[in-house]
Image 1: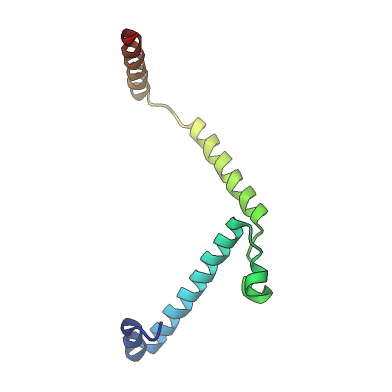
Image 2: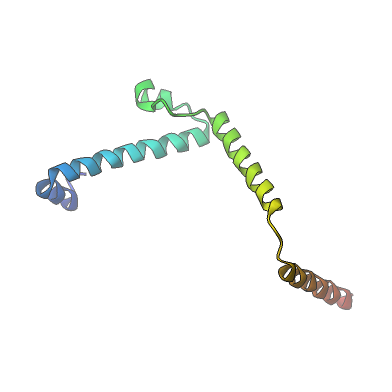
Length: 106
């Protein structure tokens, strides 16, 4: 990154800020890589070594189970939402018109 003009100028103008931005970028890249590797089912410790993998990484099975639990929770919350009676009536009317249109074609 230091070879690019925009970053080298930042390092010259404000080295402390540039260093903190650089570190944040590296951490973010490692976090995203770890997440994608887990989603793909790759053992990241083999790729990066155990120290670089970090302590908060989870296995692909754990990530899948967590995603499935979130999906089930969203579905449960969706069914609990109150339905607007006017909106529901409009939806039912649209479905009836579509069905009548299909019946007329036959």
